[in-house]
Image 1 (cartoon, rainbow, N blue to C red):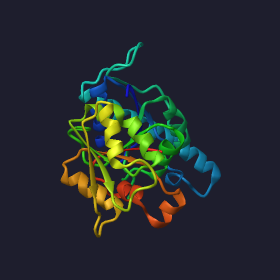
Image 2: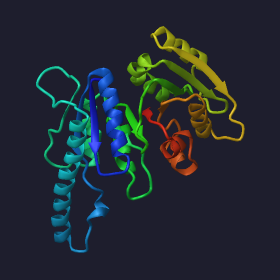
Image 3: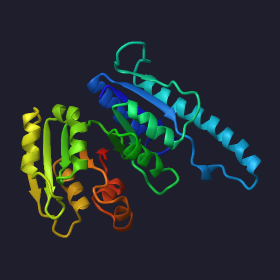
Image 4: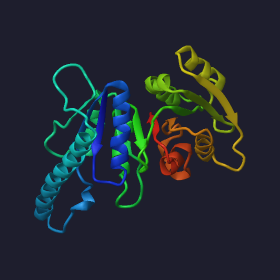
Length: 276
């Protein structure tokens, strides 16, 4: 995880996003790059089309300036050096002068090892869902989703939400550098939440063969949903990271009926690493 992309907006999770990225960058001697995310269209739509264009341009410039200051001020206070030419090292950069949209995030994220974003919410001060969807479904790379609480550690105690799916296998592979650093890794299977595929014991064995300190655990959810059971176990075990494949069910079913991914996106109080 030598290169980390941090889409930057003025929302309530941004301090936690930046600190989470810094913790990972410190562990892997990584380069962090920020860029300003263009504000949502509804922020500056007016009745007159010409006015809308003018206002949108002004908002773009303001967003770029505010986001750059937010990003660079954090890095300077954290004593992170500016990037220099050569191999990746613990450093930061901000090469884009203008704000970019969500589609750019999905494309540009393909040349980074990790994208770090805030957990979406419904309030105006919360991160938007669109950047997360772009990163998850268009970048092809893992996404670290961070709640508003600033983390103190990441990947010391990790919970893997194993369900046997292709998406979870992809996410485990992306997470391998973090898993190898962890002191404890619990591979969790929730009864009733599995898809056809390898068992939780097989998943844990695979990780152990890769040098990960992994143990398997199967739980009965009782009255809890699969997503609730995952977060309940993460809290009980004192975990600081959940590794979860994104949207094993179809996205339409997720929107209509919820699902473990949707619940975790809405309720997780610790960082979640997801991939699709």
